[in-house]
Image (tube, rainbow, N blue to C red; front, side, top):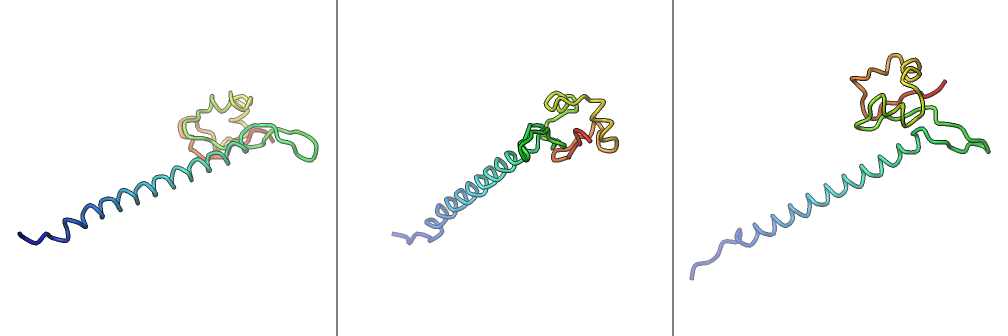
Length: 105
């Protein structure tokens, strides 16, 4: 009987280690992205309590897929006001995720 190569036993172990490593990397990336997106929710146009009084948020952090009209609808600020407060930042064709837009003065 011929002696078997050690690679025959090591190849499946290497494959299993590669799959496990890829799973851990992807899982860590998904966990990091979900915690990042929840931190932006607090900076959206929600009312927050500050020293006993409530006031609206001053900035909006653009999320992936947002348009100028969807931001106006979410925040209750008109498109004209958004354009007036952010003259250099607001180009409806080039909004980028994580961009900060002023909602009020």
